[in-house]
Image 1: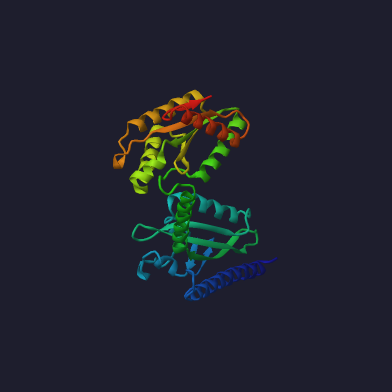
Image 2: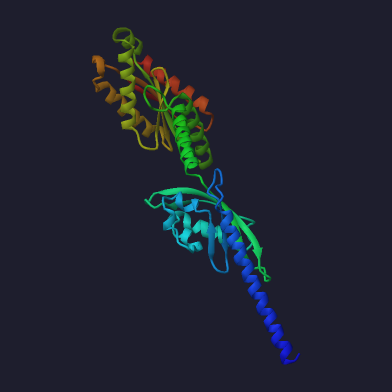
Length: 326
């Protein structure tokens, strides 16, 4: 190849390079034009040209954060957005993008919090993918779409709170605010499973108010309800954090003592009995309780309750206001 041919070849290569750059500029301009379209239900599309790190996007993505059009830089880089990410979401977003750029995942798909102008955070859902590679299979262009899902997230949080409340209510006695019968049975069964798996034991105490019908008949059900509320309060204040207090039904209560021998459960139960005996209840009611304490022997929770109930009525037969244990 002579010098003339070399110069012509060099000019051809330079011309091809200029034409390629020009085509890229035309494409970017076309993308900018497309982004002016008002996308219904989302914040529009975005394009990231990797070699120059330039991002073109629908300005709704930024104006939704409280910025005006005049505050948006003329040229925006990828870091313009990542710098606004919530610190707790930053690394996850970066890792997902790295994984996509490295071909580990087919799309960039992520939810994150992004900082608004006023310092608050909004939730965005971003989804995109590489749409163009160079001759060496390196990413050149990514295209994606972004949604503001803040209201959706707020609704999800409200629903989660409501579900949590409903779940709590479904396992809570409406009057005394301790666990209800349903919750007690479930916790009792779970405690038995844990005891069997860990070669441990546990105990329960079953309580019944003495002569409670007389309280309702002479003082009325309102006073009777207040007595039940106060007894539940005394029990809750007397047990350990690991213990469970519940209303088994009517004027009956149960306490579950996990990983506890009957001797220790008896001491706590006797302490509760003594406090109730001395307590001045509303409506000038004097109340006492009888209780049966039983330790799990590895059989069944039904048998455990039956034994505790037998001990409870033994306490009743022996004069009430007492605790019986095997």
